[in-house]
Image (cartoon, rainbow, N blue to C red):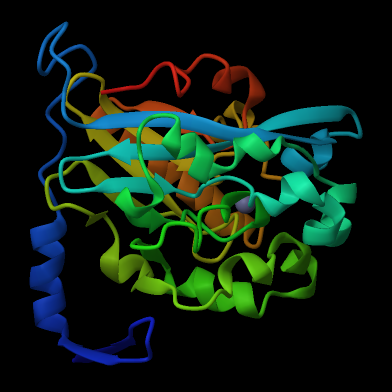
Length: 307
Ligand SMILES: [Zn+2]
């Protein structure tokens, strides 16, 4: 079977399904064998580091995070991640675009009525990268969990970066259904001269970015059609599962709440179950996308990191 894909420049790429299978297995790194506290040992800094940043918070209501669970005020962090790796720096999501700090309603429109961003212009991901010594031209990959408005701040801000997203998410973002339309800000991802690489859902599941098992991409649809999560395996800290919006909060993780914004409740529940298995097998630290209480417990950039 031939699989035809198009790259970001409209270039046709044909692959035989058998070679895709071969390529997949070469990207399937062995299961993580490191657990927290093992690895290089104390005091030896590894050459891979994970930084947890945020572009401020969103003031919202409980029901928009935990479906049907009330009108109370609820404030959530807007996390994003930087991974320093010997083969190149990787930005995951980048939080809100800097324009949100300058004119939130101008950039997000009516979405601010449900998710009111609290963000300083200095919170943008380019300046935060600089704070840990990473210049814009030194970022090799911008990787997108999905393309909702609080995750698209890095797109087009790093001139040499290849941008990686699930094809399904990219296509949906240009043509969302009515109920999801406010979540996609086209100005953030429909930018000139972007170098995109598209992943193919189940076909490319567990894609290993550097082929060394450090960053693996897990297809987790439900919250959005082409959502993906990330299993990051570090020499000292061990496996860390960046669930992003496949797991909004601990309640979502524990099957006590659906996310307040969802395109398929069934897929969202199945994706949580999938991540439960992966986290258990790897003994991973789980990082939900928007849990204010858990977020406080993690090491925060720029002063701290996981390695
Ligand atoms: Zn989202």
